[in-house]
Image (cartoon, rainbow, N blue to C red; front, side, top):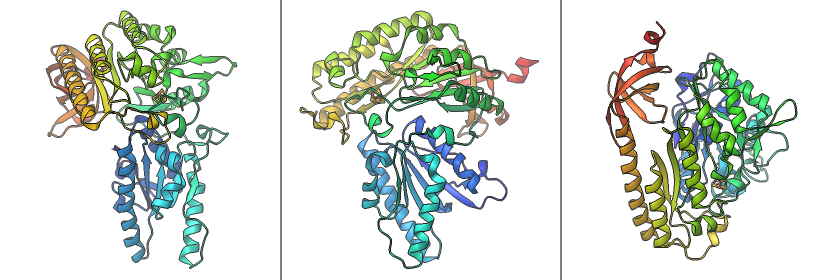
Length: 476
Ligand code: SF4
């Protein structure tokens, strides 16, 4: 869960209203939260640091895990109390639920928590101004003692027009880094996943729109751009001449934009790693040597039950081909343990795959049943205690691999893009090309730039380093 940036960073003159946006889940949601802030800014909304300071609270939700949506309902209970306290003082608090829980549960959210004013799905947040006006109108009616049918204002459509055509230019470059959403939705229908239901069918933004946004971000100071999509390597954007560009072709064009020193993309599906994209990893230096490629399981039987449309061998062959063109590639992945029917032998297959590949980092979860997905009704659900034991073993192995990967870089001097100050005074934190966190002593003026850092110590989740060449020294 991530909160978008502070009000102080964004507050402009003449802005009186404040919005607090709480973001749950993935990078796509972080991007969407930024874009919601962009939509609200012309209405006079500055960002607040906490719900207590806000006139409008938006919960941008994630539906991947069951507990995540329960957290949303707990948060809504707290917000209802704040709303009632405000009303007693003659003020109001508007509560909006956005994102995938909004899409999946729609009216149910207002039924469970009538204090919610707006429910807006991920494809409709460009309509927030209209929804706010409608919520305000309803609220005014109620204040006047008039009865209205139904509570809350809902928009969970998949509109025919793209939200991207209706969004203002993004403001969002932070410490030299920016996200750029190029693709949404998914047609894969993995049996554990709600994304095809909450985000809809695959949609790729047109090439011209992506390039224009990237140029805008570069002009605003972005030196690293991360391309986002639920299934980003399925990108197939239409170009002005009517041709269709793949992700590989798009990356080559983005690498030509002046000032863009680093490119990344996430999240990918193994089936969509085509020859051209593999080649780009070896040929475009701006594409960082890091790839998040979810495999979920090492067992063919379980991969089939998950409807992943790839087997263990395809994944291993991809890893070999990627490492052949980019030997220093750091691989990251997602793993689900305890999918229905997963036996000890299936789990051992996953552990062997991890051993064979060697991951620099990974995200791993116990299988969580999601209503509306085929996995919900599957027989042989794995007991929680078995899931917990398997997850502990898997995370221990992945943790060792992450530590080993970090240790393997100690002694090297690498470019680090600094992004924030650390907890200790005088400490700044940045990222290596392999997306490792690096702590170093340095002046905060380095934030947003790349400096050469000698790595001095490796830990489980980060490295320590010493800055050896600052950007202005390199330029001298
Ligand atoms: S490919 Fe990814 S987003 Fe699509 S259904 Fe599978 S897990 Fe969900």
